[in-house]
Length: 347
Image 1: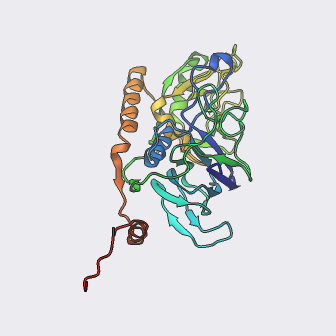
Image 2: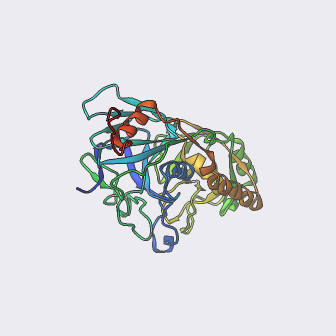
Image 3: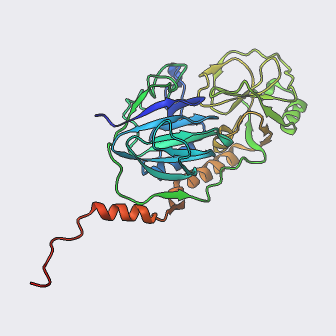
């Protein structure tokens, strides 16, 4: 039997994501990938995987799934959620485990992830990853392009997602205690590439304003509501290339920050671009969050990127071994042959 996770309920929107497929935007293919690659790397580190291994990305409401393999190791990182391990799909009151931790689960158990809190994204990594074919070098789901992930779409009830490993390795479980996932007070951005479509006063107004993440946001773009930004030369331009983090200003004057699934070209002026070091924190923000921006230089953005890379590289060093419960120790001892023979003392 193929080892797998069987989806009982997919949650609001659950997809398989890694860090994305770079290098194909010239062909009209979006990068896609995790909205929060820092949490993706954390989940993979806890599961014992390379950081770029594909994991489940759940938005707002997590999935419920059954374990269809002897045993496997899961790890959860990102937003807070109630995560229950149940004996079956109809059971109640199962074991509750926190996020930022790994856990070993066995055949027939059901994992139920509730609504997310303090963030919009949660990553669920499985040891060894999912046995899905990469598309253009990535297993990330591009729903608009219908490629990658599982059949190029978000998961649905009844999906059976194959795993690369049938059993978990014999090792301790770990947690991460001090990985800072808090949003910055202001998100840093560099000007351009069409900041000359706005007056100096409008640019100052943009950076002095606070916006709210609107309900129209999705993986393609974060729509913001607040002080409208006026154009000085109209809002239509010849379509040009889009970078993740670009802040478009359409005719409404309400900014849109383009995220992982953004189109490869666009025809609205871009007043600024959120720096890559701040994109993971931006990707965690739920609807209703307050957002403001601070201008920085390209040199400062490059330094911030180096700091982010150092943080990601150091995630494995933040893992702390969990104490093994006495019941688990006893069960493991019973599985072992600790006596090679018996002698009759009287004889």
